[in-house]
Each structure stands twice: as structure tokens, then as C-alpha cells.
Length: 199
Image (cartoon, rainbow, N blue to C red; front, side, top):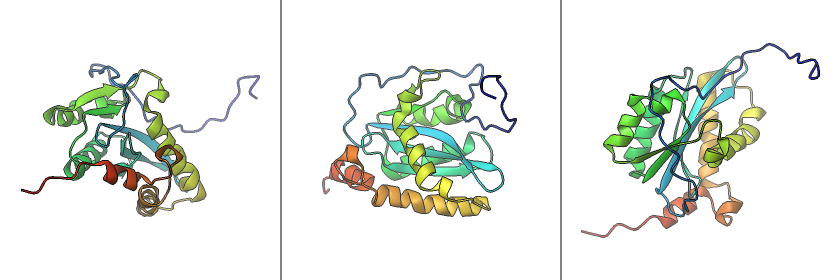
């Protein structure tokens, strides 16, 4: 079948679709050394297969510590669930210097970029088709899918949300990372944050 160019016809979810007319921002992270929490955050969307159909998962990740700062599930690809995840991360953890995404329409639209501009956050976007530009989020997707999603067949969006939430709590709080010298993302994130001075 491969030699003849024949393949099965099935619905393929696409999570990165550019919107004509939306501004594309340059990639700001090439050769940048990222060592501190809240220096760079990244965000992406992936699809989550269920017993019937699929949903979309968006997550905001701190680059230096691999900590998932916020996440949302959605049955549609509208930008609103990405904006909600971004706003939650900003409300809980302050703001990064740079925020990196791909060139998907959810991230290039005014609803999303205006939140970043309003908070004086530099906007960075992956090169077209350059998945390596956001490799830490891609590694997160691999972990979620192989350690959680592919082991389940969610019957409902509610079940998917609950089960993925449990996994992300485990991922942040209990799963050690070799790239973090065996620390969990929670340990790496919270031990490196500056301690606020008492008034």
C-alpha cells in the first residue's frame, strides 16, 4: 500500500492552521539560554483520542522547569480555551519574559496576542513546520499520550478531563525528570523562584 501510495481514509485532526492576515512573530529563542522559572513559557495544542471522537488539549508550560502551569480541554479549536489557559497561568504565576507558540490561528489572533501585549510579554513563534522550536511541549505531549491517554479509552469529555488532570498533577508533583537532575517540575519551579521580601 505504501509503495502504491494507498492509505486509509479517516479524519485527521490538525492543530496548527495559520489564518491569513494574522501577524506572525519572529522566533526569539534561538541560542537563548533559559535557566530560570518564568523566563520563557510555551503553549501548544494536541488532540486527545477518546473511545468515540477526540478532544483538544492546550497547555502552558514553563520552559526551564517543564512545569505545566495551566491547561484546558475543548471540543472545538476556537481560541477561547487557549486564552482561558493563558489568563489562568498569568493570574496564578505572574508573567514570563517571553511566550512561545506555533503559528496556529488560536495563537496569532488578536484575542490571544492582546493578552500578551497588555502584560508586556515578548511574543515568540516557531518557524513554519519547525516542531523542534517548541520541543519541550512536544515532549510533554509524548509523555501524556504514552503514559496516560493511550492506556485509556475515555467515554466522555468529563472523564478525559478528570483523568488527564490526575496525570498532570502526577507529572508536576511526582514524576522526576532527568533533565532536572531527578527533580520534579514542582520542585524545580518553586525552589528557583525568588523569595518575596517582607514588607
